Length: 124
Image (cartoon, rainbow, N blue to C red; front, side):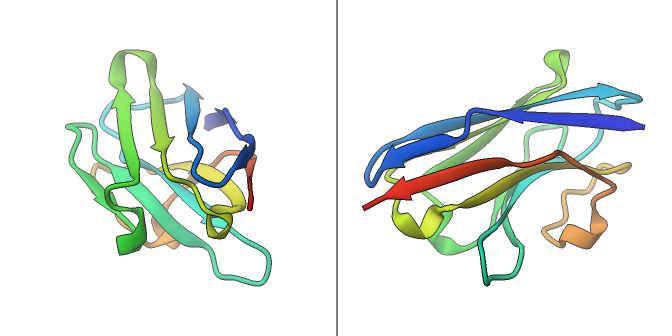
């Protein structure tokens, strides 16, 4: 079993930045694909970004490219999400995910492990 613990969420004004972290523990594999999804009230779960163990990343909506950056430190079993130029539309619960495989899908059903989520609220 793999445990994922997110941190770094909170309240920020529009235009601000946040950095989320996710530490993996338990039966972890450094080759596992990881990522971030988000879920806002009344909306579907949405892929924010995913990353392979070699650092190949994929972003969800075009609006995230250029504003968000995903990275990972395999030695620390930790994945990060830097978010800049935040808007109220980015308000959601952000979940860290991992899977027992190397391919970084953007489909949430492909991920075996989910963190408890961290709330990100962007005020206008």
